Image (tube, rainbow, N blue to C red; front, side, top):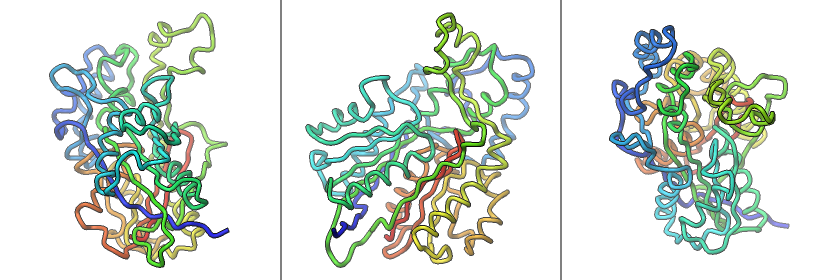
Length: 371
């Protein structure tokens, strides 16, 4: 059985609202006025330091600054990026026969967000899949689509990822009496956005923008979770501990183990890249662009020497790319790839490795493309 070759024919991204500078983060997300005294002091004294270390000049939130209401859901945010990817590809949405969306949560418990996006795209008939994952959702979606197109099950796939961090970051979401320093700090780090790619198959001798392979791994079986957000089945198992008690405890808050992320995330990302390039028989020194999920400039500068050494590259091949868009979680690498394509930074014939690490339970995933 001969396998199809798979290529990217369109990329798209979407950043909601106007750019938000660091001094306006609190105003857009809403003030924290009822937190414990120590947290209030942290917000007042450490906010600027966290922003400076993050190296992010502007970010985007799907929030109406006047009403503080959300302007998008996961599906409608993905819709904007998907339309742009389809437009670049020169395809109508009806030509998509495999639709995959990744997101860290969902619009409704049911129906799936993928089916909602299908409806918004006016696709009458397609296969649809929703991947519940954070930063590795892109790599997972690409692997499913790549394998399905290679074997001929489908001809055209639309893969997108939607990130709505601000749902968890608005002041109205918190039980402010239970907010801690981590909950507060995440408001200065995370951002909203969506990215998308369109894949098709070809049998031609030449195959521009060819996907060379994908890679997915989970290495967190013996590691505690590095990022959590409560509010689902595990928190509602006891009959006498439901939504009111969940809110009272503050267990619905988004939390991250910053110490573990600072120590483990970048090394695990590097290990994942090395395992992926080895499995795909790619010489790491031949890669022109590493598009990776590094959320802050502090982490980038702290760990970049090891990346340069192990991969045999220069800083030009692995840039910090979140300074103007913030860290959009799982959507980050697709947004960055789209910006590189549209600006002409990614040139014909160049090799790009797109790879992300996810701290929720320590996973990495990505793909390689010969542009």
